[in-house]
Length: 245
Length: 245
DNA sequence: CTCAATATGTGCGATAACACACTTACAAGT
DNA sequence: ACTTGTAAGTGTGTTATCGCACATATTGAG
Image 1 (cartoon, rainbow over the protein chains, first blue to last red):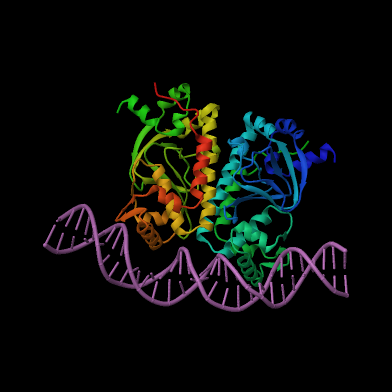
Image 2: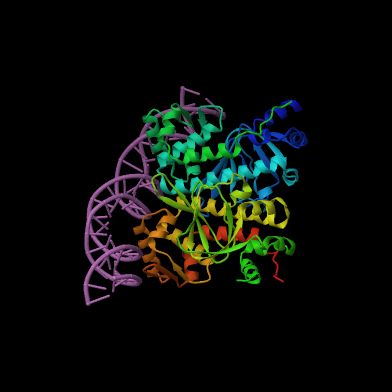
């Protein structure tokens, strides 16, 4: 794989794409492309972070793990963001497990390199902070949604969120995995998925959910989905985009 | 009220107390003390922020409001932090309502003054980012707690969280208000409070909860409380403290 | 083709929280 | 002392989700 290809791919990540030519030139030699398999754990809860990751086609889920082993997702990172914000926010460690929710590619960068670039200020720093702000909205909305909305609505939200970060209508994902993300029983996901399938919004086969009626899902989802989406667009809309040259 | 008094009071806020002498000297003329009554709304959801606030004795609750009017708290800000992080994170607006949960004093600063100081870098910037990181942990843990733990446990958590940010064992707070924070029914809070009172952990009278057995509450609370506490201590422990001179 | 592993479907009783309707208790002002 | 508004307590029936046990379906490896 040559450098040009790497660079082009790296620009699929919105944050990297928002760098100025100068910034990106400095940056690209520090980026290492990595392919990740479903289920790979990038950080364990409590880990000191050695690297940060810019997903391009992979999706990473941020999971909290409770003492009794139950889990719940607080947020999800795709090509819109970066995994490893604790590096520039301070603290250097994470409270969540970061696990690959959908196989794909990420670009890896050493902790120190990321910190250095953040410390320079500039567009990159601005975008990282804005992204963190957007992620906070996502986490907050998840908190509220967990409290106030039905499992069926939340499953809609989760499917749409994944779909947005994917190129495909096909989500390779077992009910069991989804139940870990949503912090509910596996049977609950099965039931909710059946309801959505009955309504013709998705198909629901072993190990895969295929999105059929995106508009229908958007009608069925709770407001939480759109609120988060709007905030991402507002904060991260690529007025600062660049082309690779 | 003279300047010396203001300054001394301002140092009750941990973030302000972490400033270097230089930084604080520059800062203190920009700070305006304000007394806040219970229920005052400092920001409404969607507002553009004109000011940020450093609480000293007041407690501010961050509430999300859903379309159907139901509400849930995502976090709470006391003398450990700052209200208005969107100003330095970017975006300048907030998604949450900020409402005074316990009357008291805050120090107000103009949006631009805060941004300027943040832009200088230094200890202050570091502390603000670390605080934001700690707040994210609080919000995340709330998300998970909402999903996985019982109302009674969450009420414990909420009482302890408030107590930590207060000088008193007396929480002036109706069940109705608490139910808005926790995103549950008022009757649910009544029931949970009764159980805690039966166990001798609190007294439960009209409009006031008095904390009786702090250790007992800590035994009854879910793990979420301690996780958040530890993270605050880790990120914000005042190794960088100063005395006013 | 068969088996083993894995994923999904189903049934049932238990429970926590819900919605709603109402009563009781308290406190402040006239 | 009485009224009024507000806070808290109570009762009943409903619902969503849980926990567990087990049946069925699908897939991949041998």
